Length: 307
Figure (cartoon, rainbow, N blue to C red):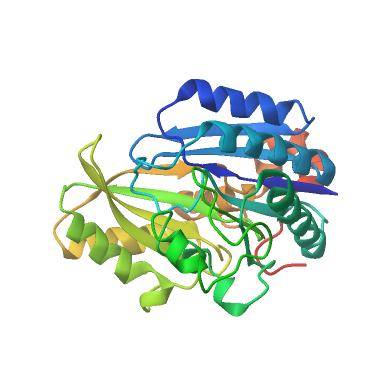
């Protein structure tokens, strides 16, 4: 059974450390499909895939590097975080059931607590209480507020106090999502925040959209940073058009976009279908994908909510 994982590390500047994380993951036999790093967010993201055992070993190996080499004391970035290895999702691929991904997440959480001394909060499909289902709630208060929070919020695994330099980690099984950022033709952070509020579900916007307005000092730019967690209900094209419309209402434009990590093939095909006005666009219409169709269909990411 195949799974994907997209571990997020609080490391936005040290390229050599990112390479060490990649090497640690590869030694397990897992496939490193991608690696990205952003200085403003102070974040590095790996995209890993393989068997459950391979991915579990890769995550433990990279966590060991992160705990040993990343010290959050004095580190800052615009992205919310509670740990050196901040969040670790386990995502089922192909016919792999969500229950299997949840079992792996539980095993990983137990090992991170026992072997590395990290407090572990299980989230999404692994959550042990409703208040921990949403990742944003798990990370509220950040690393700086972790000690105060843990006085009354005991983790699922690991010690009841934060790791001094590595904080804590959120681990959970979830469906695939699309992390997509829209850069605006303004440096006004309040405009980005207003647009994010208009599009995100929690504020009455689009179903399955989580969004933040962020200022990137290094680029002197603002962005609407989105996670599409239910992309069959709200497609990437629909989310993008809403951001464009809200930007236009405020006399600004979306000037470019950014994909963080990987996206499922069906999301890309749906966007191409809409903007090229090609109803029913599928694998059979793309030469390379048609040739590789059998292999692709075995590992295609199931939509959120599909068993």
